[in-house]
Figure 1 (cartoon, helix red, strand yellow):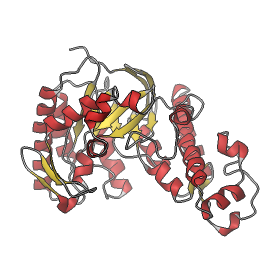
Figure 2 (cartoon, helix red, strand yellow):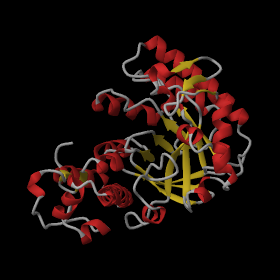
Figure 3 (cartoon, helix red, strand yellow):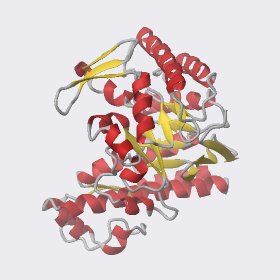
Figure 4 (spheres, one colour):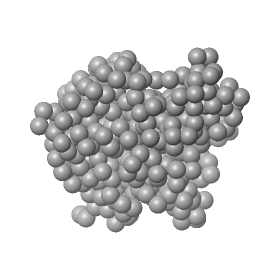
Length: 376
């Protein structure tokens, strides 16, 4: 089968599992490793699409949108009527949509899981809905993303082994149903999702089951759901080894600077997270020398840039004092500027990581970054 999305492995680091590649999509090539900004409801919060496209030096070429939220509001049929997400949100780059599985998982008592799918209540108005693997694919095909994700069950941490085992088997059965329902393979590619919690043998079993379906890419789900970071890194190192080298590996929902480096070191190609824009709206910024809480009084009359080593629009034009003033006065511009800076910082960091892998100096760059950034 010819896939809409393909992957080229360019180079592997000589001392780690870090690798350089390129994901080819109907809406352009994505250089990897890559961080994908999150546009949950067809928008990266507080950001214009052209601003997102101009992040870093090379620009952001792919972002993520959320099937569950778009299904509830404004509805996938409206997005389809508009010509799909690309036209609806005026985005010319690639788009990945998640399946809604994680959002349904996070509803807790508002959802009930069965073999058929998940019955849940809307967080908006309490209305009742049913998501099946087939429904998730139907919605994602209407949205028109380049990469769509299989509907899965994300087991919480901690969970008993028996539950995790049953969950991964259910996820595999659901993946087979997703693949059978997906009929837009010329324009969209379906990625499977590995589950298995923190049990390495279950991770291997999940990988063996989903890779048998010969999909164009694979997500690693069920990590960063409450487990200690060191445990996540340990399990992740095995997860990537279980997945094929010639397909992109996507660590779902992870995007803090330290996790990006640790994930790349273990062979991850794609990342996403709401973290940079969420913390920006709360006045927190990533900088070359660690996190800055702009609301702190010490920045009242600080006329220096947010990050003197950053070349983004925000750092070239505004002082910490001005950014603090915006935040404490609850100006909308505060969220806009801090979000732009944080996303630029992560996109630029990934550009530097790619360059370091190209030059076979990833380990050195990681050490330099951590020495400056400090504690996470």
